[in-house]
Image 1 (cartoon, rainbow, N blue to C red):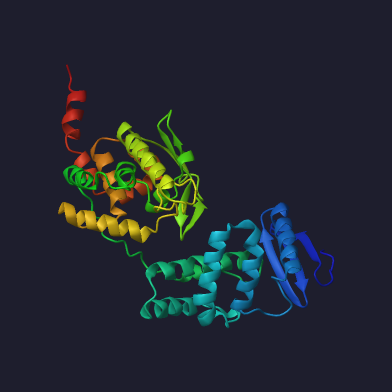
Image 2 (cartoon, rainbow, N blue to C red):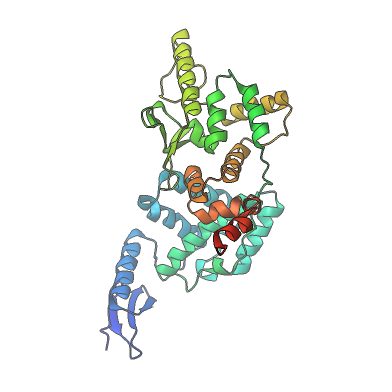
Length: 366
């Protein structure tokens, strides 16, 4: 029989059904955890005691807003500054005003579903609402783990579907036509890299000269420009080395020589080591790149596409050229090959042409 414990003392015992049980009382509230092993419930008890010490588990029922405040503070050491800031912005500006006053134990799926609908009706984008869902789901998952609520109500809520912009790509002739028009521009290398490697705009604007290995022809992609700052790429798949062809390397050398001239022209140059900069060495605003891109498209008489569509164009041309999808995945920095195949499934039917004839030849009996 389990020994009776005082306030904020825990107990662990094995039930008749073979499961292990851990319990702890917090000023009259009993928190309980069942598990298959003693180690599992002991770990829960240890984490719960830690959360009590941090003030996450309190003597009285909390509102969702009070819990989210404590949760943001608790996860700070285990999360990067940028996503933590994103979580905080969505909690403060979107979630708190609508749901913050509801007791966390009283929160229901219909509360959250109505919140999503109201946000969309008021003009908030799908991506904003989906991120609110992700933040709430993660926060409530910890609440379940710590025994504050019995279930994660976000599991019973339908998050908005992704609004995927229609993909537009150029064919090889159109790409060559664009490259002809962009020749001699100070950012020619930027556009050439975009359409030949599929790097994202932020990754291109975050490139530094130290990322280029002139001997091996490899380009290290390890950061991106975000709101005027350089931010390290967070996933292992995003941090990658891309092999450049001779033409790409030549255009980078031209860019380097051009930058040396810009550096020598005036005393206002600020050295940051970036490959693509303003005329004074400052980071380039993405809007400036898009403005130049749009004007050159018009000059070339080509169908209008987004700058991001250069990435899609690069991937499509690689696949059509017979590059293995796994290599394309690594070039693009996708987390999995399934993501690459799902994104560019429109290319795959054309790649099947001639497969039947080739298999027929391979399997022909002599």
